[in-house]
Image (tube, rainbow, N blue to C red; front, top):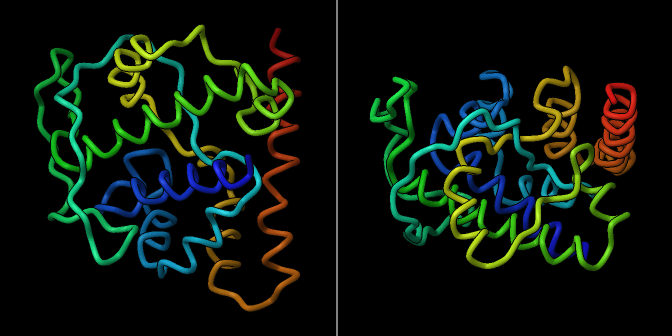
Length: 206
């Protein structure tokens, strides 16, 4: 299970740093996003090994539109999506800019993989879902056709977890560059109390 979790985190990081602007698009402050985009693949591997899921979803107000899901071209750097900077189009009816390129298609593929993993884990281990995903944790009733349709709208609401925390991502990036084993361990384990804090906040809001 941990191997799958690590692979999902690596997939998220691929989306975050695959194109300039990707990390900020998914909820990281611009200065933090720029630091993340400068990390080496082995430093991103360190972040991917954080023992909680680093991807999440914001609340959906309305379904988004989508283009066809496609495969991103291969790259010598496994965290790099081939192409130029992210380009925005204003094709959404509400006038909100929309990503419409290889990055967007790669994000939809990742979202479909994430939903499939949540579906599989929900039937296997509810406690792990609560730990890894946090509040709102359990996904709706899913099936292959539902995932195919839901991935399109859900991609519009894909976000990094703890993106608004002032220290989590900056500390994780600093630890990824460090050779201090204690610092590296502590920075990844810092996600666990944040998950518990999310759960407490959700319980209080009920």
